[in-house]
Length: 346
Ligand code: TLP
Image 1 (cartoon, rainbow, N blue to C red):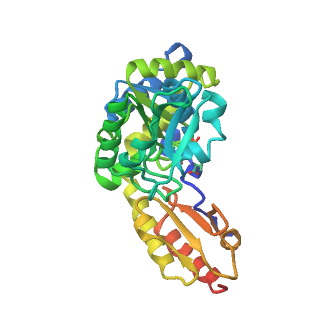
Image 2: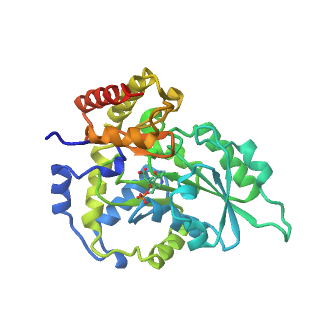
Image 3: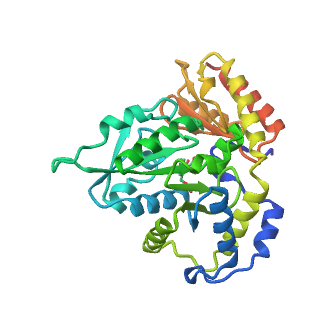
């Protein structure tokens, strides 16, 4: 039996032999004492890549975002974000639960909100209102289909934030993909945010881990929340070694994932019963609609699954697929063949 082609997420990637080798030989220490050399190396390496003073290794992208939100805010504050943002949709209501803040979601186009949209919703000082404290943006934007947040707009938002004394957090779980697609260095993007989170366990293929970067003072505060959330790990160098390997070896190859995602998107565009906005396909994520009268998106996903292609339905008519380092050109062709077979029933 052929293996399934798993396009549910780039989080499904498994460490390859060279990464496992690096993990096996990691030099470790107690990171709660700050004594794990591999964690320290990762934090310094990635903070430097992002042009920030300091970094903090955390368990997951969710922990990175939530630690950052807590370190930026006080209970009762408000955080402006985009309506489809990961922090608003997929983090279990954590901003309210853990930081006591409310989110103020704005509708974006391809996940992008503008400084012009944000300025009018910044609350004036009045005892009726929550206190606007933070703007959160996401690059690339997951639920919009891996779209790239243009750097010019990030700059405008950052300047606006400075004018009003607000902080900016960048959920850069897939900032690597944005940087590879645009050739804009990570540090250029990070310049327009006070804190940045990046993930090692998505397209980069490490088994676990994310990082928050920012000023030394910000990371000092973040460190406390990481501990409070139970995220103080001990010999975490075992995990950091995989992440370091990924940062050194698996970033440039993301361009291959983008090319394969583009090929899948172009093929999907040719099927009756499928609608896809090709402008939104910019990196490794492809989102499309099943508009057939005969079959819903979850049914389409089930039938493709039975034929060996796994994807996620993200609504009654929307499907998401994500390309990653285990997906080959042959897998892309086999996936297109399965789409052909299943869409014959449309
Ligand atoms: N996204 C996951 C799911 O949670 C939806 C996925 O399969 O894409 N920020 C962004 C932009 C993300 O896409 C994700 C994960 C996270 C944060 C959270 O990362 P983890 O899963 O490590 O907590």
